[in-house]
Length: 354
Image (tube, rainbow, N blue to C red):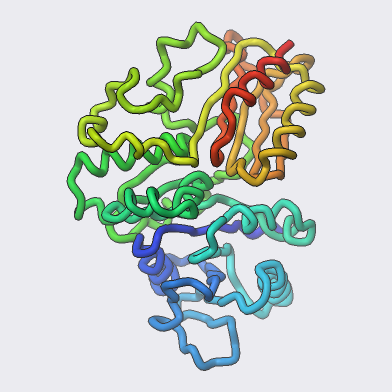
């Protein structure tokens, strides 16, 4: 039986998660989807769609979707759904897990890697984060869980942009791409997202493409002769002429978010043993603060690209395609985390080069 794809949906209060989930549960999109809802959420679909007084915690919708609220543990709920599917009692093609109110999507994502039984049945596709443009700056300033949700995202949907000035939207997008240059950002109308933009994004695929927002890298093009991009997350006004900065005069603290990202690049090959030791050590120490990290690497001793990625303490790697003829063998790694010591990472990675 092929693996069941899973999407984790997270997002700010009022960002339109409920709108998106209601659409999935009621729209005639022809896909059979099981939604697992964390019922401690602040905005519960239950009161609008579901009958609360039933004992059954799995409810079949008229478009073939299923809604299931977690009464026990996520693992047990996933096991139950998979067992019912195997026995032909339930029919669904994919799962969406809503993590309202759960501060950190990390442990939810880790379930799909750590737990063998779950990993044999499900495939984690991506983490989507919905952002409410109207309240985002305040939420990001005040709440670390909001910043974490950005750091984890494979795709960011920004809703309510029509309620905010264009410059403010640009400033927000710029701030988000400093926190997470991996995740494409898309403005949506009150959480109304096309189903095609939600599924099969393959954010956790080990592929040779390292999706980093190209604008994020532009800031340091003059420094390309150096080994790496020390000036990546420059403070405002230092050497940065991004148009949105004009709108942010007087708000320098804005980019002092604790969730930040940085990119390491080198044209020298890595020593596999040294790199493994170093990454093992940093994950051991900083794992809880490392949200997402990924790299496409030039390793000594192989003609193929080596791809690695991780969430918190969990890391996996794979051999990718061969380097193309004439392709520059450049290693690139992106790290997204909470107050990670960039200098320690850069020095350590430098020392792993052959």
